[in-house]
Length: 96
Image: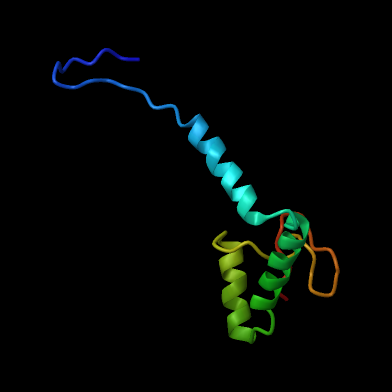
């Protein structure tokens, strides 16, 4: 720790480790014993695929431009598509 050159200021350190552990415990308790992370991720992928399905030609071009620019994850990047097909590598279903 650096020595403070201003005598009116007091240096101190906070260790938030216990608070973070308590927060994580509370989050897990709030999720409950029936929480299924795999099902939650599958649902997110299905919702994402549905969100970007049925685009008209102009919307599809805009979507493709945003994916190419890295603004949206997309293409054949991953997850499970609504029909149960597997996507590509990173966690979002295809929009086409």
